[in-house]
Length: 140
Ligand SMILES: [Ca+2]
Ligand SMILES: [Ca+2]
Image (cartoon, rainbow, N blue to C red; front, top):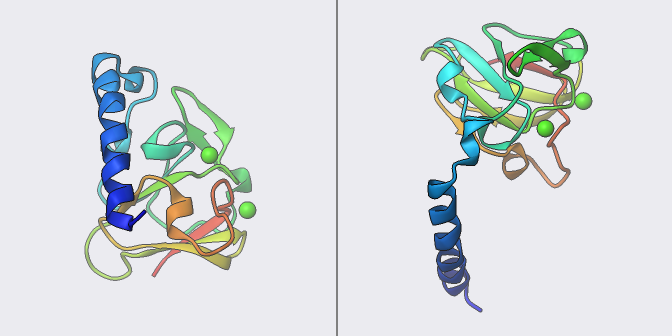
């Protein structure tokens, strides 16, 4: 099947799902939390589509082992948990983000330009999975 045909059939299959989700929003319990990412911050989320366990950073962080995230209460350690991100940094270098698999900026797994958000980080890293892997980040 051609790529276009695959896309078309995937789109047709999505339509009933979209209608179901409009009638019964799953977002009530776990809303899209991009709106809680303030200007100047790099925000990380524990689940896809910017849901669950938000953490926001104005600066660099060399090790997430001592960072919590907010999920209605401040809990759940951030380390090795990130599934989606939003770079809401202010325009003007350094305003892009490098995220790393390990503490101390070792092994970059994704790059997020200023003003960009990724609904699922695995779509933006290399051959090795990067979901639930991030342990540090820095502005560049
Ligand atoms: Ca996750
Ligand atoms: Ca890690």
